[in-house]
Length: 480
Image 1 (cartoon, rainbow, N blue to C red):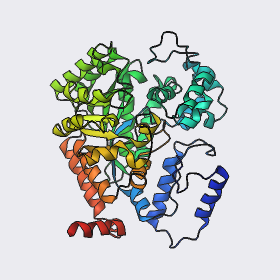
Image 2 (cartoon, helix red, strand yellow):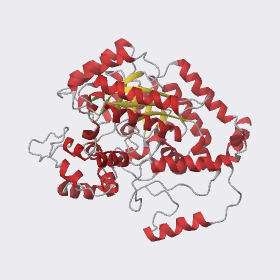
Image 3 (cartoon, helix red, strand yellow):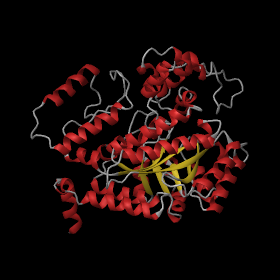
Image 4 (tube, rainbow, N blue to C red):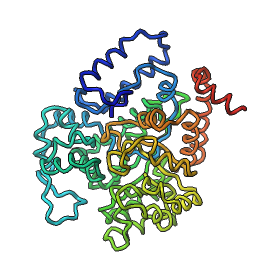
C-alpha cells in the first residue's frame, strides 16, 4: 500500500513526488544513528521485494526522518503473531529454484485446494503457473496476497478475485501452494530460512518473537522439520546478536484446521519441547481456518481434544478466531470451550459487547495484524480510524500489533506499527502501553519477560529518545 499524503497520485506523479522529497536539502545533517536506521530499513524492505519494484505494492518510507519515524524504526518491538512459512522471501525462493531447476517437479501439476469443499471444483494448475514465471517479480506476484496481483493467476479465479471489493482468507492461503512444495522436506533450506527470519526481525529491532508454524506442513517427518527450524533460529539469535542485546525467539506449533489428524501429534510435540530453550515451544495454535469451531464439523473433535489436553498440561493456547465471515461466535467458543489465552485477530467481535466483556473478564489478549485484516477480508476497510483494533482498545481489551505473514502480505512489523501511528492515530505512549501489554501476554517464562521489560526501560532512558520532543511532551503531560 502506498502510504503517502496524496493517495490519488498517478505512478509518474508519484515518482516525481518521491524524487522531489529525496532531493530536498536536509534541514540538518543526519546523525550516525539516523544513517544506521535508514540502512536497516532499506535492508528489511529489500529482503522481500523482487528485483524490479516498479509495479510492487512496496512500503514507501517516510523520507523526512521525523522524530516519529525514527522512533518507529528504533523502538524495541515484540511480535506474538507471525507465521514462519508466511515469512519466506519469494525472491530467495525464486533464486533457490533457479539454482535447482529440478525442484519445479516438486510442485504438483494440478491440485484441488485442501480447504475446498465443493466436489465439483476444478483442480488448480500450480506447476503451469510457476513455470510461466520469467522473473522473480512474476513469482513474487504469485506468492503475494495483494488484490492487484491476482490477475496473474488462474483466469477464472482471477476474474472472481478482481470483482470482489476485498480479499478472503482462501485468497491468502492460495499463495502458500506456490512455494510450500519447494521447501517441503528440504531441511537445509528450512534451517537457512529460519536464520534469515531472525535476521529480518533483528533489522527491525524486534527483541522478542513467538514464531508459529505447522511442522507437519513442512515435512513428512515433523520432528526433523522442527529440528531444522530450531537450529536456524538458534544460530540466528547467537550469530546476529552482540553482547548486551536482547534477541529471543520462541515457537508456537500449529494444528491445521483442515488436517485434524495432525493435532494429537502437535500437542505431544509441544509437551516434549516446552523446556527446550533457547527457542523452545511455548504454545499451540490452530491455523488456516475456523471450520473446526462448528460442532458437527469433521474437524471439530480432534482440535478440541488437542486444546483441552493443552490445558491439562499447562501449555498455553492461542487460536485464530473471529477472522472469517460469520465467525463472530468463534471467539466466545475459543475462550469458553478451547481454553484460549490469546486470540489471533478476533476483529469480528468489536461490536459484540457480551464477548468483549467475556474476554476482559478472562484477561484475553488479541493479536491484531492491520494489513492482514484488510487483505483477508477480516475487516472491510473504510477508514483506518475505524479499525477494530481501535474499538477493542477503547473498550478495554488488550491488543498487540503483528505482521501475520509478512512476505505473503509484502509488509513488515515496522510497517504495521507505522499504520498504527500514522493512520490509526496512536502516539508514543500508546506504543509503549501496547508493548507492555504484549510482553504481559507473551507465553515466555518470567525471566525472559524481565529481560524484555528492562530493554524497553533502557530504550526509554536513551539520549535519542529523551531528546525527542514528542516523547518529552508526553513525559511532561504525565507529570501534571
